[in-house]
Length: 114
Image (cartoon, rainbow, N blue to C red; front, side, top):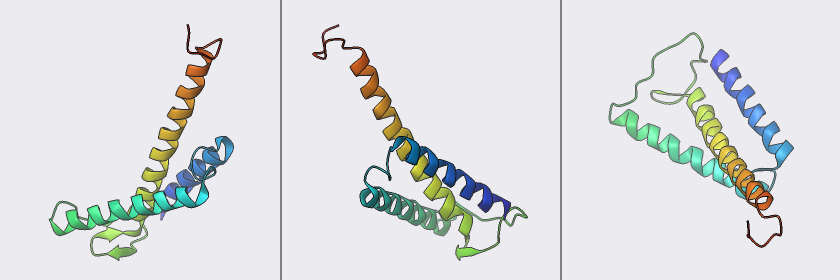
C-alpha cells in the first residue's frame, strides 16, 4: 500500500507543477489526458507482452496492495506508468518552454541578431 500512496503523491506533485506553469494537461486538457491515457495503455500492453514472454515477473511485497489487474501485473504498475508518462510530458514541455524563453532573451531586438 505504501508504494501506491507514494505514486499517488508523486502524481499529485506532477499535477501541481502542471497547474502552476501550465505545461501539459492544463494547456490542452482533452489532448493532454488522451496522450496520458494512450501512453499508459501502450506501456501496459508492453508489460503484458513482456510478462507473456517471461521477461517480467511479479514478486509479492509488503509495500504493495497485492491487487493484480492481470496475471503478474500489479495495480501499482498502472499508476507507475501513468506517472512516468506524465513526468516525461512535463519534462518535455518544460524544457521546450525554457528553450523558448532562453532564445527570446538571447535576441535583444527580437530579430535573431546577437
